[in-house]
Structures are given as C-alpha cells and as structure tokens.
Length: 205
Image (cartoon, rainbow, N blue to C red; front, top):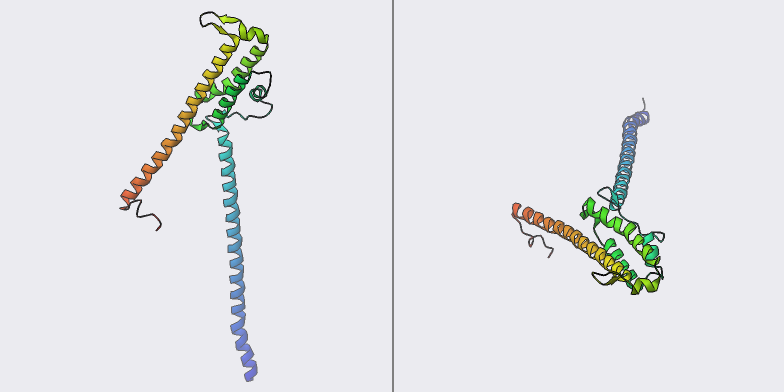
C-alpha cells in the first residue's frame, strides 16, 4: 500500500468517527433546544392559565359574582336618568364608587350578598316606586307623621343608609388588605432575624 493510500485510509479512520460524533452532538443539541422550547411553551401556557384564573377569581368572591356595572344594569340606568332627583343620583354615584373600590374578596359571603341585593334590586325598586308618585305629592305630603317625613325624605334616608353600609364594608375590606401587608412585613422581619441579617444590610448602596 502506497503512502498516499495509507494517508487517505488513516484520514478516513479519523474523520468518519468525528463526523458521526459531530452529527450526533448536533442532533442532541437540536433535541435539547426543542425540549427547552416545549418547556417554555408549557410554562407560558401554565402562566397564562393561572393569570386567567386570577382574573376570573377577581370577578368571583366567596362563590358570588361581583356586579358588572354595564349600561344596561338597572342601577346604572336610574343613575343617569334625569327623572331621578339629583340628590338621589349623587348618593347613588357615591354608592357605586364605594362598591368599585371595595376589595370584595375581603368580605364575607353574607356581606357581599346583602350589598349586591341592595344595589341590584333594592335601590332600583326604591327609585321605581318613588317615580310612580306625583312629584309634588312626593315632596310635600308627609307620609310618616312620627318623623314628619315625606316620600322624598324617606327615600333619601334609605339611600344614605345604604351608602353608609357600603362605606363601612369598603373600610373593612381595605383593613383586610392592610392586615396582609403588615403580616408580610412581620414575616420578612422574622426571616431577616433568623438569617442573622437586618433589612438595612439588604439595602442597595
């Protein structure tokens, strides 16, 4: 065998295994890349589902739906109806704002049920009954002699009572969130103490 043939043979002996090793390595890298991509997609899908679940949960509190104030909602219809006395609508607007800013998940099922019923049923019925009266009669004729109250005054009193109730629930719900924040701070303080470090040490300088 000539030297040239021997050189070619030795080259083949060295190159062919290297080729297959490189090919196998490339295939493995491709498999790893595909696997990482699948894991990324799975992770992204899971995160998306969890986020959607959180959004759904924000609409549900203790098994009860939180009111979605659409333009067709009876409460909203009366709120923007010019037949309704301005004083009534001003209080209704405050009630709506209190409801919107309330952390409903911090309320009990009974509290949310009652507040929903007041807004969705009681207030619309109250306004509807009031508007069925003659405007002059509603404002001038005393129907509660003990309090010397007219229909107008009685409705106004009830709306104010509902507003007071909604404000108290709002304050309670804010307190619930504040308690969580304080508990979180206490937890971090405990972690820092157990680790032998203080919060000051962890500050970025």
